Length: 322
Image (tube, rainbow, N blue to C red):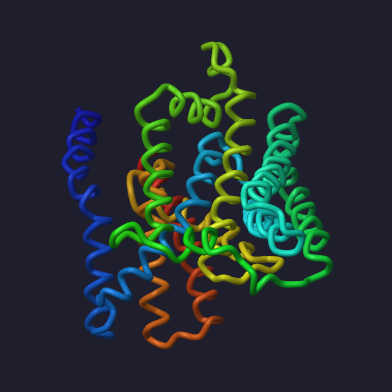
């Protein structure tokens, strides 16, 4: 009887849980709008959507890794390689954009392949493996830009269009993010691949007995994480028209915060959809604080406190569900 009563209470609470996150998001928007009337202007909304797209691209890659129970500490540096590798030889050695793009893809795939092999084949802990490639990515960036030289001129217009252009009223970064989101939402939610990725993280033994090639899905998740990080770096450089070492470094922890935030705000599961919502929530939150005049140091502190709050809330939720 008590079990049936508990189940009924949980079912009754489900609609409120589903509405809690959207209501929280709307409440945040209303508060910032009251405190700063210019918060909902067209320019501000466009800025938030573009920033959400940048963060969402790299975070979707990390989502795939975290579905398998891993983590990627090298994605921010893979993003930097995507930018420097893609444009350094184009600007300084007069290569074609296509050749530069191939170099960028090769570099980020190198990072992802090493990560994937170390974790899936050699059994190295994900944190340790990706920490090693983080330093590798840092070294490759410094080697490519010859010790810290920057690219701030000579970028091809076709490349700049990827970061600053628009298709109709839709900025290119937003369009690229939407395409990536649709592809990986379809793959993870509407095909068996999503089940295999989650199974690789939840119970590898059972998944292997069921015929799932766990090592392959773990490997491919790290490759895709680095590849999507490279996509972010490539278009981020185009958006800023400025490329230097460490271009994507800040996205390393922001992407981790985004995935955890999305998981906590939705149904407690790591999904592409929850990550996209987490990216939008975080960017809207940061934009609001910036418009209120919060200094950069305060923004960093706020993200740290938010991460701690998420971890505590996740622990509380697990206790409630057990």
